[in-house]
Amino acid sequence: MRQYGLVVAVATLLVTGISAFAADQIPDEQVLYKTVDGIRLQLHVFKPANHKVADKRPAIVFFFGGGWVGGSPSQFYPHCRYLASRGMVAVSAEYRVKNRHGTTPFECVKDGKSAIRWVRTHAPELGIDPNRIAAGGGSAGGHVAAATGTVKRFEEPAEDKTISSKPDALVLFNPVFDNGPGGYGHDRVQEHWHDFSPMHNIDKDTPPTIVFLGTKDKLIPVSTAQRYRALMTQAGRKSDLHLYEGQPHGFFNYRDGRNTYYYQTVIEADKFLATLGFLKGEPTLKNAAIEVTP
Image: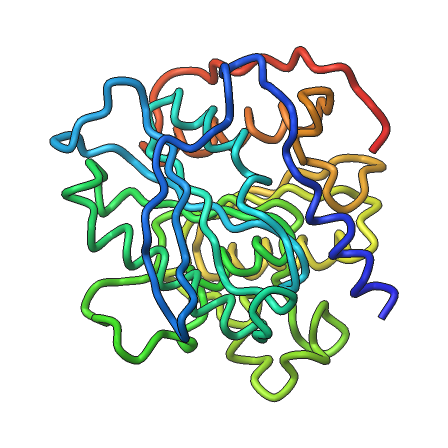
């Protein structure tokens, strides 16, 4: 229970500052992507300058952290605004969580898959390339993103399965990707853990992945991330792992523009996406933050 409370407290840090690279972090648009059991779920969309429907931009959909219990899309507003400045359509998604909707972790994954499928379905009207859609997230949101790229189950029955809910790349910040015995959240998903755990569903079609993790993370051991990378390598898939010495869970969050690890991780994510053809040129974000102890 102590671990469960810690992830909720750490992973739901909200974005409150004004960044050096954007005048504000307010989404350009919010669009409804799903209505389920009377719950309306929105995508918070950030667009590149002079974006047109005729464009075929790469896109990324972020999922906030919070232990499948709480959290806010605003966690990834700074990431979205920066990547929009680099030419992507960047989205931070709402999804159902326990403290607002009384749901289980399984509904989180269903909503994640619905969000990716909705973006791909509506790519023409969003000015998006349906073959360049990434998913990203932190902590339990990292799990949701990873699950969209790995697990086969937990699809909404009424949706058109001919349109894939699998992203083309994954950008994961201290992700929960082992739900097996001894892994995070096993007690809440144990009946279906093997189908639910991204680590146990890696195959030759798993999207190329980048992972950011602090070496002092009390929820996600370094050994778990190393095992994930090894399994990806065995499957012949690209998997980059960046470890940050002495950093705890949630070390990557924006925090009023003062956290140097926000800048470091976003710059590396930019470089990774460039290797996949999502972005061109060098990162425009500079690591000018004041380093503070998280």
